[in-house]
Image (cartoon, rainbow, N blue to C red; front, side, top):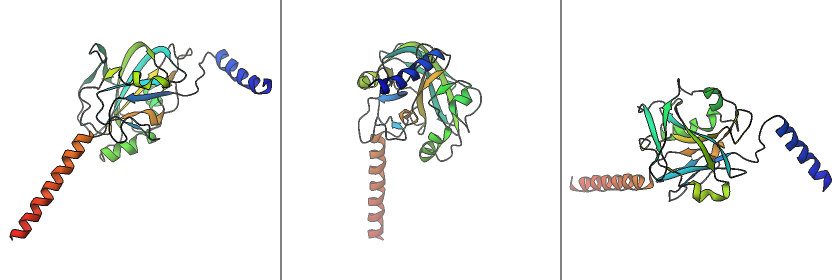
Amino acid sequence: MKKVLLPILAVIGLALASGGAVWADAMHGQCNGTGSGTCIDNGTNTPLGNSTTFGFTISPGPQTGDLVLDILVPNNYVVPGSFTIDFANSTLAGTATEHTGQWTSGSLKGFLGITASPNNPIGAYLPTAQAEDPGATGFFVFQADIGTQTIPGNSDAATAAGIFNMISGLGGLDGSYIVGFCGAGCTTDGSFVATANSGALLVTPEPSSLLMLGAGLLALAALAGRRSLTV
């Protein structure tokens, strides 16, 4: 037992001596949507689907620190000047304003000019965004500092899923993401705990919209069939 504990204690001691925090994991997006694949970390992202609320968990948790939310919007969309973020009780949480420039290469932390872990390379986000929005070559990045918040642990995913209202204005901007960072309080060295790449919340068409689209296509096919029979 001592042989196992000593290396672990040495790693913890080294991390604390360097002023950082020890994390077994990162932040993970949570949401309250229903339907196939919605709110499930599929190894690539976590689709929002028809969610009306969302939030983040952290491991180990809970942790209290400065929570920052970033909204990544494919760069071929026409975007608003800012996004308003509300808590689930509709109290204003913060306003996400656009970071200068466009994120088209490298890591998100490099684009934002911060130190964060895990690393968020654009390759973990852009291919899926392009599947929803083929014209995208990168992202506009909007950021809101929510302030000091207690972020639940992973075992409290249901609680975390109801922290924020879905962000008004993101509907229809398919291929967008919501990610979180936790700074002072979650770390002690000025760095940030970032969202796991697969834990990023992905804006996708709502299941109901897809059903309506499917029904519309079936109706058009039926109409075309009727016309061919009457010719």
